[in-house]
Length: 436
Image (cartoon, rainbow, N blue to C red; front, side):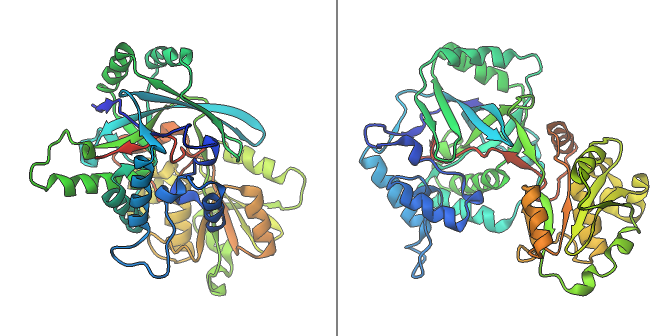
């Protein structure tokens, strides 16, 4: 199955960087414009300069954010700001974080994983990708020739065999132990012991991997590999045949998936006229007074019922939360071909995207106009924005559980885009995978 190997990662040199905590950044796709600027000013060596360099008005084909990222990387390598590990290693990242007042830790294994085409069923996706994001990451690979941030993938360890072997890493002195300004802590251990390395590699040789987060990174790495393999003298053992991943156990208590709710704005008024009545074509509609005590606790209780699909809807100016219970789910495939596969009928986001957006609001198949739709995980903030009129309407879903992701992936199916939000995100710059 998966070919999972140690690698000589590039890491920031503590002798050249005053404060390692100030040079790590989030992955490119969750950085707001304001935070992007803050990271640039936080430290002259902040990894944002490679992960997602600034765009300038005069950018050209040869002088642009990607060429600047590559130049920055080369300068840091020459100045030993970044330096390679002394020996190939698996990196155990204990990622400590707090969510809603609860402290948790997620253990990930940074590894180099052989790229295989999706169709081979060894690396399994669960979401579709957007071409523009893939092109952005391919350009980073072409210019900088490194994996700047990892693909997050899940594996199964029901017998806890791998977990037992990884305990060897707990006795090691961390090669990095930092607390980021935002509060997350990373304790990074480099596992180089040959016996433990072999146990880890052998374990994954019988395992598929399920992509959790980073479908665009993996897809771009595949495309880059195809380009490089077309060159004369290329070998399947060259570094570009691999991609950096953070591997996490399906049952890790720190594996958190948040629900990406759908919030809409800038829609013409007729689209939302008589919304409750239109929804009744597919759903039983129950009204919960918005300002009643415990209204959202009641939504959570009702949505937790695994026997049916329930969505919550809130529109600007509406006094009630609309609780939507899907009517006749077994018959959906008769009228909407997409739902012929039973696994899709288990997905709240499919009900929003393929029934409400496409059929009820008539926004078309695969609607993803980001000037009109936002994918938001903060429910209280979204509720307030609906009440203030910043969003016209929002549809609230429950989180997908990891086992449903596995079921979707094993069926060869795909969830709608933005169906999951894994939290916290694996950072960029903690370890860098060289492809040269």
